[in-house]
Amino acid sequence: MNKMKVCLRCGNKFTRVDNLKRHLSGKTQCPIRFLDVTCKEIMCNYDILIDSFIEMGMDTDDIFNISRTPAKIVKKKYQCSECYMTFQFQSGYSRHCNHRCKGRVITDLKNYNMNDFGQENTDYITDAIILTFLKKPEDAIESISRYIHFNNLHPENTNIKLLGFSNSFVRIYSQCSWNYYIRDKVINKMIESALFIMDDVFSRRKEMLYASDRKKYDKFLKDLEISRCLKKNIKVQLRLLILNKKIISI
Image 1 (tube, rainbow, N blue to C red):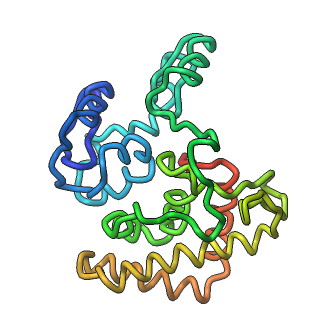
Image 2 (cartoon, one colour):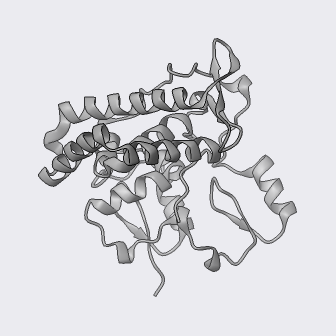
């Protein structure tokens, strides 16, 4: 039986990806029953939000993750990473990516002002989004960093580059130019920023979480203080995030 495609706002299921896209592109947004996010955020950040949606009680056996479609069911060779359309020939794929994809965000510097590292725009990050991340605190720092620095809807925050996994330097946008900085110091700053956001939302909205989720988050904070292995894993996650510009799941 074919698995379903699901709207992360209202929970409606669809048998085709095209039907879900049509649902999300409607003139009026569907009612919020699960995640308090816009339809455009679902289209651009499905891979981040799907895990939080599943944790809210949906039947995982009936959900088809659009952004994690196994390669064996994609019959055509080329797939757009923005709108998930597939193409048999590279020429059609390139033409689509360069000129026709409606899901692709234009990244020409003329269209926006790049924010300095540490001065990112975070006004679009709602408490509801952070609360969904807090349900998996061991991955929350990576998810928040992805949502800030590599968000397709906010290219002005894409202000960090890693030239290689083993490279001890990164390039960050600061004072109107790209500059080299020590990688570990930059990653520590990303961790501090994410933890500040997490602690702020948790202190104000923790009653919105289940007791088990609150205990999980408290345990995570204690482990973070004493576990070198946990700190190392988070730093490796962020290095991979910067290098790939997205979270890779296998």
